[in-house]
Every structure is written in C-alpha cells, then in structure tokens.
Length: 212
Image (cartoon, rainbow, N blue to C red; front, side, top):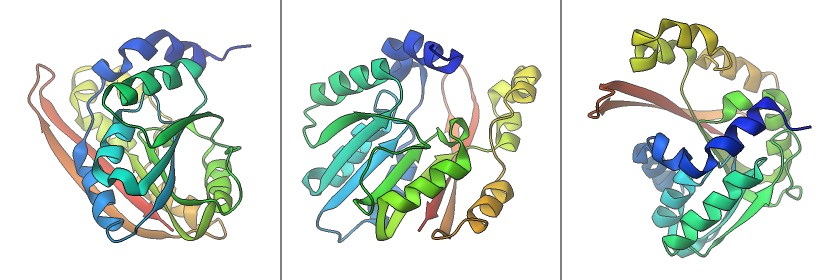
C-alpha cells in the first residue's frame, strides 16, 4: 500500500526541482568543514531529486563517493537523470528508509540530510545514522524550524499553513533528542538567512546542525 506521502512525491517528482530553491550557503559550510579530507564516503538521506547532491558533488569533486538515498523510486529516477545530465559520475542511488539505513556499520564518513529531517522518525534515524558512521564521522542536518515557518511568506500570508505544518522541530527539541541518545553529540550550529527576490518575496531562513 502506497502512503499518502509517497503518492505525493511520486506525483511531483518530475517538477520537484523546479518548485524548490536550493541554498548554496550550507553546502559551502560543509565544504569548509571537510577541507583537507582526501576521500569522503558519504550518503544523502532523503535526497529527493538531488538538488543538493549536485551542489555537493560540484563542491567536493572527485574525492567524494556519494550514495543518494530516498524511499521514493520516482524521485531517485529524476535524481539520476539530473546528475548525469550535469556530468556527475561519482554517485549511485539507493532506495531505503531513514529508520533502517541500507548502509553497513561504520561504513560512512559523512551523512547529509537537507530539508527532510521532519519527515523521518527522528530517534530511529539518529540511532541508525550513528551506527552507519565511522568513528568521528559527521552528520550534517539542514532544516528550518516551526517558528521560521511563521515568518516566511507562507506563514505570513497563509496562516493556516504554519498551523498545519507541525512536523518541523524547534532547535531545543532537536538538541534534547540528540542529548538523550548515546554515541552522538552536537558539534556546532550555523544559522543562515536569505532574501528572496522572486514574486514570493520574503526572507528565508534555515540552520545546519553538525552532529558528531
């Protein structure tokens, strides 16, 4: 049986990249954090159609081997077409779920997830991420918070949107969850602010949590 979420992403897979804005700043921060590492085995969990994977590949180059993981086959199909059309070769797609990551124990240097953490069973995901990462491996989480939703264009002009979207976390909630789990800890938090210039004018905001 296909879930409502899966049906939604299957429906919009072919247009998804055109509907979303890709923020390069968190990718640049990740690039700086990984400077000097000669080879990086990484995975993007909840990769969608690969908007951020393309930026990651372009920034990290040939020293990156990237697994692009999503639970939706149609999104992965679009991702493959997108990355190949831009000349990317050092990636492969993996179908799987965030609570049961399809990666061997201690096999990954890095895990990424961009604007997807609110879709995951958070404790199961963090626990399995800790298992899959090597000693001193890193998990980078890019997300927005509930309060930020209220300040963007959707929250200001469509109040029922922020009232309905309750899956997002607040920063203290994420910090408390991480503190309650063994084997991981928050290393740093970066805050970003964006000025959008399209017809949906307004500031966009997001944060990257570096979890070790």
